[in-house]
Image (cartoon, rainbow, N blue to C red):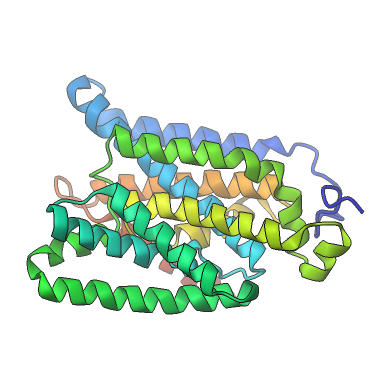
Length: 315
C-alpha cells in the first residue's frame, strides 16, 4: 500500500471545499496585520523599521510553533506533545545567557545554536521515540540548572535573561523576522511533500513499515524539522507557552476533525492558527497596559490556561 494514499483516520471522504478553512485563517491573519499597524499608518518612519518586522516576525514565530506542534503530536502520537519537549527551549536559554555574559547583548545566533545543540544531544542519547522525550526532558533539566548557575555567578544579567525567556517580540527586526520566515518557507516544502509518511508514522512503526515507509530515516527527518522550527522561534522570541501545544487543537476545534483529516490540511491549518494566535497575543500584549506592554509569553500562557480550563469544565 502506498503511504501517500493511506492517511490514517482519513478513511472518511474528503471534504468538498478543503481550502475554505485555510482561506479563512489567511484572511484573519491579514486583518490582524492591518489592525496591528493601524496606529502607525501615518508614521512610516516607525511603521517600516519597527512595527512591520515585529508583526511579521510574531506571525512567523507562531506559525513555526504551530507547525512544529502538529508535527510533534503526530510523530509521538501524543496530543499533549509540545515542540519544546525535545530540549530546544532550554538550549536557547543557555545560548541567551552565554550571549549576555560574553557579549553583553542577546544574539539570536547563539540562542539558535544552543537550541539545535540541545536537540542534537537529545537525539544522540535517545533510544526510540519515547526515549527522545525522556532525553529531552533530562537535558532540559540539566541545561536549566546550568543557566541558573551562570546567572548566580553573573546576577547583573538575570533580569535580561528572564525577560527574554518570558517571551517577547519587541526585539524583532527585519533580520530576525526574515530568518524565521525564510526558514519556515524552506522547511514547508519538504514537510508538505513528505506529509503522508508522517500520517503513516502516526499509526505506529509496524503499520508504517508495512506501507513501505523507511521509519528510522523519516523519524530523524521529522525530529529535525521540529527542532529547526522550534529553535528559530525560541531563539528570536523566547518561550511562548501554549502556541505549539494549542494551535493544532484550536485548528481542529475551529474547523472540525473531519475537515482536517488529511495530514497536509492539518499541518497547514495548524501553521496558520499558530501565526494567528501569536499575532493576536502580541496585539493584546501591546494594548492591555499601553504605553507599557506585557511579555507576549505571559499573554499566550493566560489564553492557553483559560482555554484548557474551559475544556476541562466541559468534560
